Image 1 (cartoon, rainbow, N blue to C red):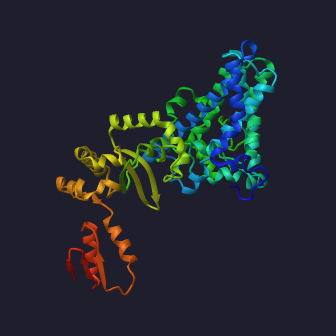
Image 2: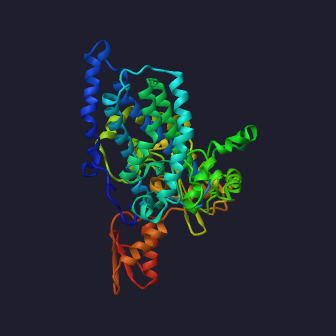
Length: 484
């Protein structure tokens, strides 16, 4: 939210929550019905294809989200040395609002804009004209509109919402107040409306142009550099025509430089190019994969849990413990992910965090909770855990924490199995029992003289009993074992 929100900040369908897609229902039903029933000129393929086009945009954005979070977690080519804040993940989970908004306008334009009906699949002249108009008027107008948004009046009411994200990721590109999106659509509609009025429009031109906008927006907001420098070596003028993630990252950290949309030429012309643009680009490309200080080794829980990882759906990752009915409709993708984890069968990076100078990473074993209760799976699971420990040892990790069922007594004796097999290990393998003991100890009221332990005497129970006895507290169990 902007510091002092202006009018038209919220999206009109915000009160609908997860049911916001119903606003598209009238047009989707009408477009499908018209295509199925009508014949001849009344059967408008371009009108019908708006829904598949919206679905393609959602898939395209999701692919960028997953790629970005995976690459950022590994650290290769990273630009800003910070992790994502939880508040940012929550703020950016409604990235699909702009697709709904654009979809409504596409439906309206297809029905009421002259020259926008019964479009052919392809016209080369309209395609060329679209990108010439984009490179000229659109990029020029966007540059000055963007500079205007940084005036304190508009910035405090609107654009500060976008700049709340210092560490950017692909979906940051579309996190703006509703009023800003209205202005952006008017701007990007210039080439599309021109095609309609001149009768040169085509389904292919619209698809490619909007996909180009999504592609450049997503790419430019990644927190890792992925444009190789050999491209600019082969064609040096390209640096004026295509920006890079590090170029736009400087805009989010410095605020008063690098205003251009996708083509930095206007920053060169008007003197707003950040002086450290080239050096940051080169240094980011040289960044190798990060070696963490602390590693937490977890595993998948249910087949649907793949969606709730940071590399999964952004909206579900921000609410990892909620269950949604529509995940059952995703069973083909879920089955595909299960096959992929079975075939790939390697531990993968989930996320990274940084607490001051301490670098942390989370890795996941490609096994589900159910598999940990199958005895014949123990050898495969232990093999994956041991491989992860040895890999972490090579990377210089100091502490590895076994999470969830990776630390069970029946599986590996709380991690002792791996230390016994590899006595030369320098890495410390911990299972979290010390933390559990500390939590329990702090919850025991002062003045307690006796404690009764119930249930099985596990490693945690023995450690707890030992700590209590050191405090002079009598400890007994249901087996009538008395310790002092």
